[in-house]
Length: 563
Image (tube, rainbow, N blue to C red; front, side, top):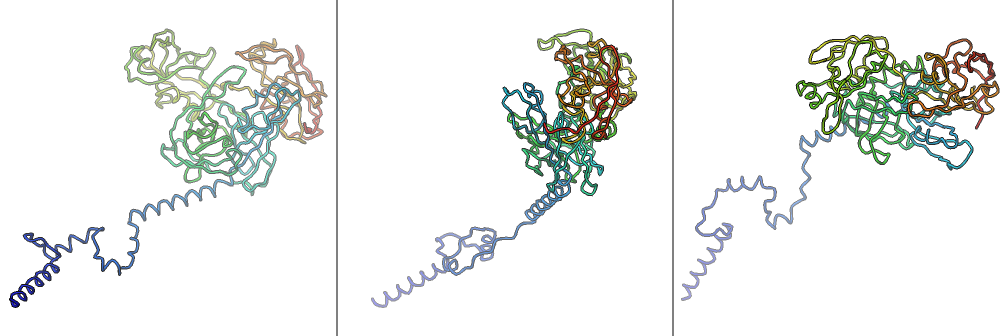
């Protein structure tokens, strides 16, 4: 009996030992080879660790970054370095511009949108003149002290102050402005060593998706940089319709970006990753007057055309054909019995006496109904200009802005009555959409500098006719004489009669300045240039038309007082 019990105990112990060694494998299951079991465990990151081993094991160091992640980090570092390099290179070229506008009671709405950031708004019931200040941006153009900004930043400004990136401030004077491209040039008198002109890229080579960097002074926060991409190209930006002639134009080729642009950025720069100017930040699309991801910049191709002319002549003459029209859509093409995929610029109206009329361009002469709307059709369809394709009206305007000059002859390819033909057109200078009106100082100086003390505007054909002058009479109409000014002391006459021209009320009847010291003056910009280098105490002789007679009036220039 005892022998049997001992024998059974040995069998049980032996079985238990064998079971322990085998990992408690269930009977009837085949066992994998040892090598195969190791191979199955190695790739599994969450393989079970025996408790005995887990307790004694050391923490596993974090795995090294993969090649891909190392590349990503390197790319981010490179991009960051590129951004900081661009800022270091470009920021010294960008300036803060502060303007002061002296407005009269009851007319603040006329100037309320001139600065990008107006403040110190007065009580509208007050009867005294008041000051309105605003902020914008600009950038150094050359070593002579010329600074480029937007026209709407400095338009109507009595005083312009420029603050550089290092905090130094100095006064600036207006050199020239072009409302139809919303560009202006001001000038500072500082050492050339303090000026760092900005390089200019070719905006016609810019691509959608390209990195875009905006640097300016949003909300007065000087030297702010924001980044994004070029969102779209070839946008059109309407020019404000504020002119005596009630004309309206567009700025073509405008660059759209999602780099945040806010009030105060106007006149600043949109640059590429190389720190070169792609465009001048000008406007935003927003319901809140702050960035909504849609900003616009006047392209460098237009800047390069306009700015040198503003520096040399104080103005820029835009080329002019003398037509209005619209893109040829599939519906319009069908209405004119053309292929629905035909594209071009449909001429609707031809301005009398314009280059287009002289060249024989035909406007639309009949109406059709499209989507319950009466639409004029039948005019010439412009499909190319100088062999460059024209797919819509913006293509035509863009080519004129990029590649033409006043007096140049261009060749238009047109479709008329299903027949293709070419017409040569000699381009003329178009009338500006905003007849430039000065404020207190037509010579553009600040407090303490020589001033004349009038408000005026370039004499237009319509105003000349209303004043019984020759239709082609040129000069500057004096609209108001500031009390106590040199002009007032010399007895210049301001305008006193209101008439309606082009839907706007215009003051007429004042003296018309036609020359300064015997040198002809035809526009307000020319008068500003004539006065730019004058000295306090200097006497000038103005030739003026007063009624039916021409008179010469001597004016002694004085320092502009604090007002």
